[in-house]
Image (cartoon, rainbow, N blue to C red; front, side, top):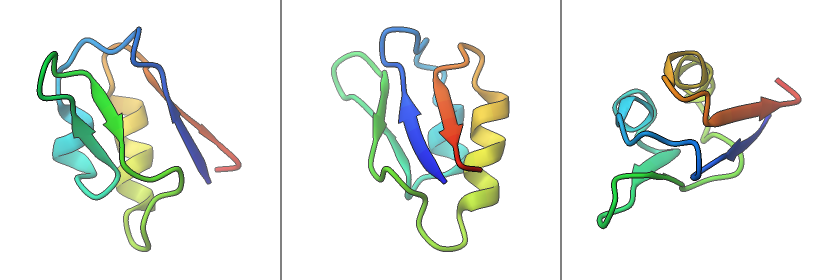
Length: 65
């Protein structure tokens, strides 16, 4: 699974970080999503899928899921 994020769409809710902290972080300046890994670490795949579904701005996209 490949992960991409749209920082322009991100509304800085932080749900992705709460759900998958090894994959996502937030920019210290504006709170937008920061992608830590283009592929989820082992064991975090389900959390990344949940983050995609939970994101209020649909800023997370998964391919090859």
